[in-house]
Amino acid sequence: MSRPEPAASQSPTSDPAEAPHSDILTLVHEVAHLMRVRFDQYARQHDMTRAQWVILIRLQRSPGLTQKELAVLLEVEPMTVARLVDRLEASGHVQRRPDPDDRRVWRLHLTDAALPLLDEIDAARREMWGVLVGDRVAPEALAQVEDTLRLMKANLCSEARTCVAKAAAETQKDPSDA
Image (cartoon, rainbow, N blue to C red; front, side, top):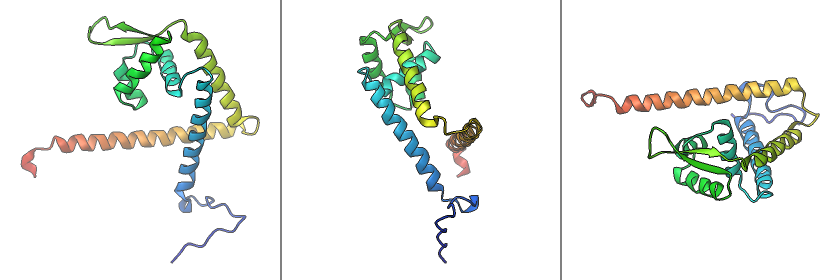
């Protein structure tokens, strides 16, 4: 038995039990994609990439990260981060400093030359925010969206931890249990 199509005036998501999950997933994906495209354009105006901007922001928030730590945060391979940091170091925005406790490790720090660029990144973020919400989205609606997105993120993180814990438990099972 097929589900009847909603009337043109009826919202297909008015009943949460009947909501087509792909609509919100598609919408979140499309908004994120459009934001990435816009930030790519901003970064190119400074002869940089969005990935380089993300590294600068991460180092501003957490000075002294290692390339490996950055790779984990950015969900990319360490070699990808190494190439990006090489370019940032060559342009004078990032400096590698030896770790005082482990001579094999290099800690990443912003240079003074990165500060004006971080101001530009902040201006681009403010402009993006203005485009996203303008004066058409009420503060209450923004608060609800933020709360909902944080809950969704927590759900995904919780699920990921549960899946990792289950996988770890399965690999540690006693072979005699099989």
